[in-house]
Image (cartoon, rainbow, N blue to C red; front, side):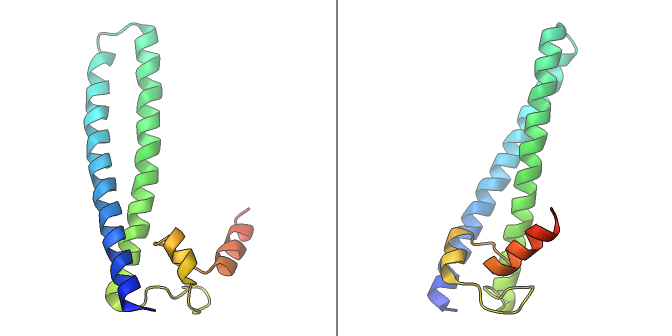
Length: 118
């Protein structure tokens, strides 16, 4: 794997990581603000707040999952194992890594894994 490409990917992953952490921090603040109105709101306000809270929690879970994938990719870069499929050990094509920089499996292995979980 080309060192320049890996360095560029690392920079992208670090930027994505910072963006996710900032979004999670903002969601935490938004969630705290949603808790306050429940105490004095009418039924419509309470229902709306519950939906908003569920949406924030869902978005937070997706961000947390992506953050884990990014951290794992950064660790593989550190170990010099970035771009190697964890399932078959073959090199992951650069085009796939450009599209999904935290990919840990080649397309074939990822497709097979997805079929197993259906």
